Amino acid sequence: MKNGGWLFVLALLAGGPLFAYGCSRGDEHAEDHMGKGDMEGQQEMMDGEHAGEMGEHDKMMGEHGEAMDEHGAAMEKQHESMRDLQEEWLKAKAAMSGGDTAGAAAAASEMEKSAAIQDEFMLHRNAGNKEEFQRQAMEFRRMVMGFRTYAEKGDVKSLREVAPRIDEACNSCHGTFR
Image 1 (cartoon, helix red, strand yellow):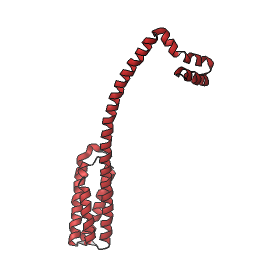
Image 2: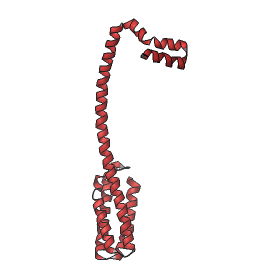
Image 3: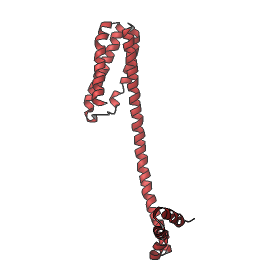
Image 4: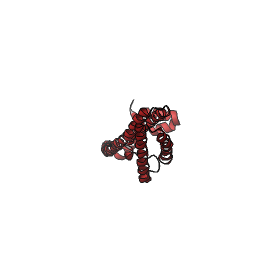
């Protein structure tokens, strides 16, 4: 069945016989005004113009898609880093609570590795305040290095003093930027 036939059936179901008759005559009506050859020329012209527009659209969307892929990969790396930090911090606190300063030092060392990429982070909130984020991130890394140093020395008293400050730093940064 030609396009006009399907259109007729759909129009008949949707709007009744008079509407269907008018819809089925659409191509014929245009040919009455333009001639059959002109109709095909117009369609070719439209197809060509549309194809050019679609080519530009596809190109733009491809570039946008690549940018979104890069953004997504960067965010995944960031989120993975934060999960690693949290996991290692929980290990460090558990080790500290059990008197295992070597375990606390090892976990803090892993935290330092994960925290090293914080300057590359894309902020979820307050993105215009990147300098403050970097200041807080540097302070956090300094505290983690101190925690590791105390753990390596077996200085449990200092570990217990710095641990709450690390928790506060995490909460403060997340409250502002996440």
